[in-house]
Image 1: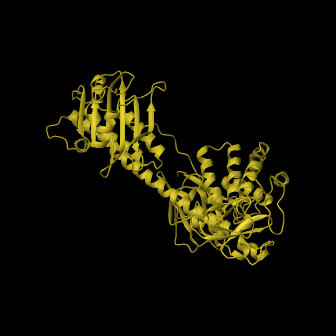
Image 2: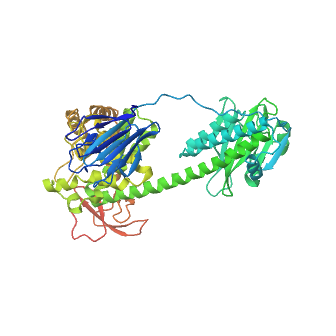
Image 3: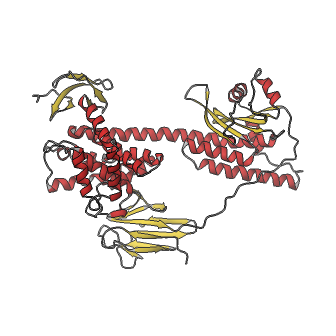
Length: 563
């Protein structure tokens, strides 16, 4: 029987148990299950894992407390390698068995029997699009039908690849890669309009010869963009005549094509490709093919633009929530941002790539967002918490995950929220995970969070000197903290990066506050004294400037007295 992966229990009574995933694995409290979990929060028949050649799926069996994958509650989920599953209080990691690598499959390009045109050909792009998908003539030969079949297959494969991408950069790269696999192009450019402007800017360039600079005719670009035309030229000399002496390219270009990127009657930009030295490199069939690909590319580009805007909107909203948390406790204003920047410097020392560091930036900002569910009296208590109060405080990692679980673009940030209070030795919360069973994102933020907490002043204690805080963390290396993460903090500190972060924020905080109404940061002159009134330029609220323990904060009501 085929084996598709394995389930590893990370905590609880069954910690360390490994269950191979074959065709069916049942999970629950009953003894009849393949994987039995004794946790009382687990239903008798809680979930089932189904394996096949198409992948591994986990399904919730109408359990009482739900099924969570990557911190998100699901009823059915296709599992990926490394996915964290939560059933009750049990954390389970799925490790996928890697399939044998398949060879790449690239659709062939059918050579058309149609004679390629000379000089310049211009046609309406919408007409070419319909022509590409036309039904074959009843008298079409077997060779013509086979050629049409291959062209349609090639476009289908290309469209699937284009549609699967979500980021603009990946869409651009995939579009050009697919075009180059289907036509004899040397250079490729994608130009898009900017916002409501009519001007086009180059967004992506692919050049087979890095030493060659591509120069396209502005007249051709404009004509294609404004009129929705698709232009084919097989003569550089003829192309020069279109722009009053402008060259299509200054590097021995014999053939070029330019087509519009049109989405629902809106032209987003153009795609341009050319060929060096080969006469009649492109024909009518190639132009039709490029128009068909451009239609799919335009939809993908529009979707990527929309998703980017939507993601930014979500991030702005969650950022406001993070600001709101800090505003509830003026003693810790700046904590979120310091933790974020410390974590980013640690990530750089760990060798994480820029895309991952960008994720750390968002995850760091949101790591404490779950505190919005904590009672204000506990959150702002000017004294150490009681055991009962601390128990209530401990819910904030899970509450943070709850806030993020339905936001698609922020799901990768859940580990930063959910696991940043887990400890290397398993004594942390909420799940008591230990060592590498704790996701690396949680281990990273745990160190950054602890360092900033140690160096921050609270009403009941003064913050430590940074060097002393670092030494305290080093002492807990291998017990409370991941040794790798502690080493990263130490390296960043020795380079002066951590102290610079602290100095920058403390300096800015000395003459700035966050508006208690809209979260906007307001700077003020050093000469302004406590008790003064200032005005927020965003919400226009009058704010009373107060000071405690040497730090300023804002209040919407007049103070009874000023320290």
